[in-house]
Image (cartoon, rainbow, N blue to C red):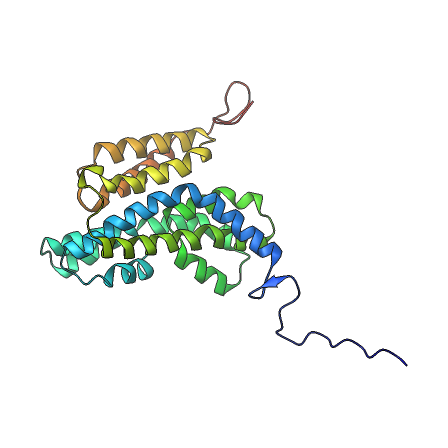
Length: 260
């Protein structure tokens, strides 16, 4: 008596060794990305707490905090809008201010275009929606280590998804708990400091060192500018002036920042 053949896997049925239809390798790449961004997550939570508390303090409904964070996903511009509304600024000015601050995202898109080039359109759209200052920087820095586009997109999803998740959770907690973060902590400095911390490992050429130095100096000197415009000014001036610095090698034939 012959043994009946085992039923084959039907179309759409997840293969063995998968969870939610996602293979083990994809989960490993996802968690590798999450670990890469993990050191920056506490700052995102604290900044989220401050924004959530600001929403309530401005007299807006608490549900608006997580809603704004899940739709705008840009802390500096969110705070700028709320602060403008608190000062009874016209809605047009509030929106224009947020758009100016978010103009930096155009710079990120130019850097991420080659990183996302081999991704399907749905992945490009999803990852672009989740992208923040910190996750964009980590993605660009780590992309050369992930030549396989499938593994790379799962790594970037691990970088960007959880970071946005803790930001949304932080804003919800801030709206519920109220002003638990002392104003003296100067929460506004968390975003540029986190971004600077991420970018330091990338300073391997003289133009990048010059651009970072100029950007940091401008951010600190113009710290009293409203709506986080010091960060935008520092980024633009750093890029503009860094373009004029020659990319010359050190006497040993190495670029600045390279190890011996």
